Image (cartoon, rainbow, N blue to C red; front, top):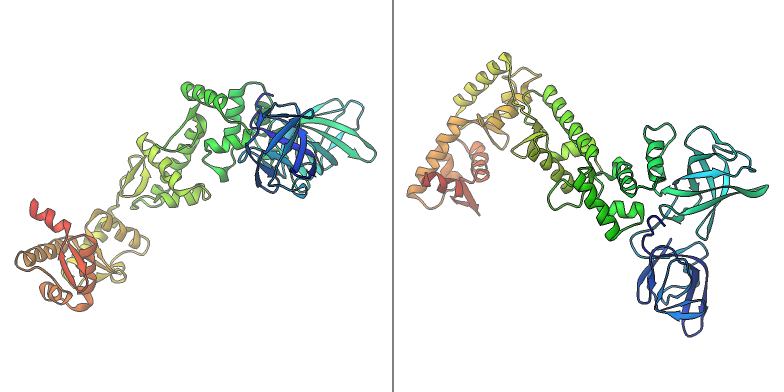
Length: 468
């Protein structure tokens, strides 16, 4: 009743009526059910529409929650709808194998202990279920406690649904309770926050229930979206929108990333920011000459199952709010600047001098590493490339002054000629074809030239140089 949710009809009986087709009966829960409404059956996820409705033997256009309902479902068969199946609004409900809930053991019943096997009765379903007690090893008669339930084969369930636990032998009711989370796998004995989150979900404050649902989002579903919240609480509509608006206004919720439906609690957003900042700080400490990390590298390290585009938008939101910096497609720790030590600076000068001497017969990356100490070789080459002191041409490294000289020669060539071939570039640079081909490709990458077949034409970068 606290969060009625979309309509769902736990089926207690399904049969065929000649001339009408399949009819399913049950007690309606959630919102009203109307003729023409599209429904799905769970489990199975088949779709159908309500052709007609009857309440207490009479036809109606609309059935209200709590009423005994007979629904004519022409696209289903009785075999699709065994007792325990739900017929419900599509997209909100599912069959679950692990539920978390709070129970009260009857005063006259024996204690309910860790690992006990009981019969779970929920809706119209019955399933053999293993019980896991979340606080201690057992719940004494007359006492309440939080549990995880593991129904064999799974059962349809929704937040706040009531259930009963019965022993198979000797037969008798042991306990009753309510579902607090259909994502019961989230809660484990001894895990920090487990009992506190469930306690909040068991309360009457809808705002706190929403916050607890978001805080309980497992890491592999990060970041939570509005639709995740709807599925978890089996609740949508103006009531949820009103609560979310209130929580946003109070600053309890954050919606980072323009155009996203991501919803994070303020504490989760701060924790995410700290996590990313710490990851980038450790990268800066381990790679003082590094250029930072790509978004994909951060995602793989922290939340590998997060959707890539959404995760990148979260990182960009961190940049906008000043938690981290971004440079040329990479993310770096706030204020980080690569700082080579004296040894690295001396090695860089040696390498640049060697690359300058080689001119348009440039060093390969392998040759360049021979000029550098082993432990800083590759990072220093990357550092010089990022700074622009070196320009990559295939597997070769061209010193910046030599590269600028080549650009000037190409610009002078196009002042007189319309096209440029690799052979002509080889002559222009005074080099061999071994180097002319990667140099030509590097000019294409830098948009100095544009390749069309065997010919190259002036590129946008060259036209910009002329404009200056």
